[in-house]
Image (cartoon, rainbow, N blue to C red; front, top):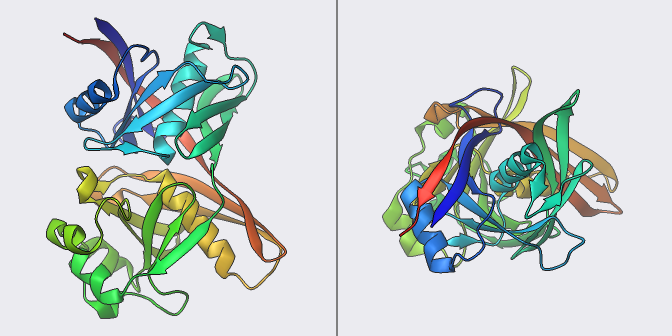
Length: 302
C-alpha cells in the first residue's frame, strides 16, 4: 500500500523555518494504530491524516498525531493541512472552491480561511473550535521546576501560571525577561510528576517584547508528547491570545498580537493571533500564518 504525503513548514515564509508538518491527504483505510506508527516514524511535532467528512457540508475529517498520542486539536497542523489541500485543489474527489474550509476534529469543527497573495495560496487562518476556558492555577514552583527556571523569574503581576484551552489545554506562564525565556529547558521528570499528558499538553512560556514588530516571544515544551520543544504552537497561542483578551479591563475589544516562537531553536516562526471580546467575555479566538512547501513523496506501508 502506497500513501502520498506532503511536508510543509508552517508559520514561516521560507523553507527550514517555522514548524514542519507531514500531511497525508488520503488516509482512508488506515487504523489509528497505523496513524500513530506513521507519526512516530516521521517524528515531527505533528502529522495529519485526512479522511472524508462525516457530514458532506464539511471539507474533511482531520486526525492529528504527535509522535506519542492523538491530539483533539492543534494549530499548525490545521494551517498546514488547509494549505496542502487548497494547493491540491481537491479533497477525496471533491473540488475545493472558495476561501473557506471546515475540518471535523475531536475538539469540534475547525473553520479555516485561506490566505492569498493575488491568486497564490500562501497560508491559512483558523477559528478555535472551542471557547476559551481558563482552568486551574499552577504554582510558580512547579513551572520553575519543569522549565529549569527560578520561581522568581516568573511574572505574576498580570496572572498566575494557569491552564488555558481553546480545545487543547496548556499551562500559560509569563516570564519577566527575554533572557529567562532563552534559558528555559524542559525537565521531563518534573512534567511526568506534576503535569502528565492527560492533564495538559505542555507549558507555554511567553514574554512581552514589543521589539522589531513582535509583541510576544514564546516557547512551548511538551516532553510527554515526545516534543521537547515545539517551533510554533497554534493551539497554545490561540489560547494565549484569549487569555490576554480576558485579562484586559475593557468589556468589548478586539486584541491582535504578533507572536514569535521557535527563535531559540533556530526555526523562527511568526503567528498572527487575535481575539474578540464582548460584554466581558471572550467570544472568538484566531491564529494564522503563512506556509512553504518542502517535500512530497510516497510511504510504502507493508
